[in-house]
Each structure stands twice: as structure tokens, then as C-alpha cells.
Length: 164
Image 1 (cartoon, rainbow, N blue to C red):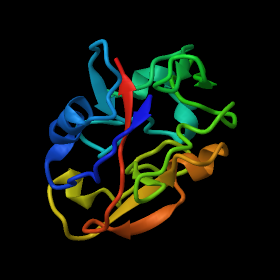
Image 2: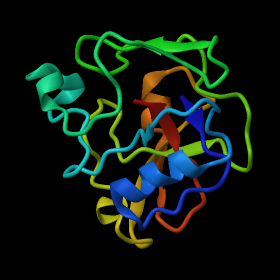
Image 3: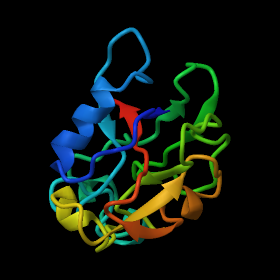
């Protein structure tokens, strides 16, 4: 996992956010394909019920975290956390996603604190108007990592990118 160095451009849809992950200078060397850890309620969904309690990982649509997997920082050694069978982090992270801050320590997510989609997603990341939910890469508490607050879609925020 890594945080992009540039601020995210939000009005480009899910595929455009993924492209930003794969072209950012913070992307680890050695290849790999990355996707943005965001949800829009249509093209990318983490959970349709709180913490995927109803259907588990079957609730995912193009979700970036895999079930029962250990995720690490871009350095390849620092463990961020382990996902559950539902493909989400249910407990607090072992370590922050990143301690390096280039500009802002907030990243867009489009998520509520229980992994369901927030209505604040810049209209499926198609516009710079409206609001977007954000989290912080400097946090370990899941609610703060994925849903620290809401801001305008024109505000500068980062993306967290997850290797696929």
C-alpha cells in the first residue's frame, strides 16, 4: 500500500483514480498494478451491509482489499494490517498506512466508518462539486482511517493505493 505524492484529481471516475495510483511517483518500483482504496456505490463497493456482515466478501464489487491478506507499506516490510475473511480491516491497524506527509495527511475514500458507501463521493467521482468522505493515513483506528470526515470535492486530498 502507498499514498500518492500528488493530490488526487477526483472528477475522473474509478478507473481514473486507479490510473493516478499507477502513474504516481510514489508507486513502488518493480511493477505491480494498483487500485485506489475508494468506493463509489456503483463501480467499486466494499460492503453493502455494515462490515459486510450480511454477505461477506460477496458484497464486493471491484473491491481492492482481498480476504485474509496481510498488507504492508511500500517499503515491503512494515505491516499495515490484516484483512478479515470479509476483505476489510475490522480491527485497528498494526501501523499507519504512511507516516510521510506531502501536503495533506487526508485521503479520499467515499466510505462510511463501517465500510459501506458514503453518499459523499463526488457523484461517483465524476465531478468536482459536492462533498467527499475522507480518512487519514496517519491513523490506526479504522473509523479514522476510512471515514474521518467530509470535505468539498474541490479540496486537495490524497489516494491510498493497494497492490492487486
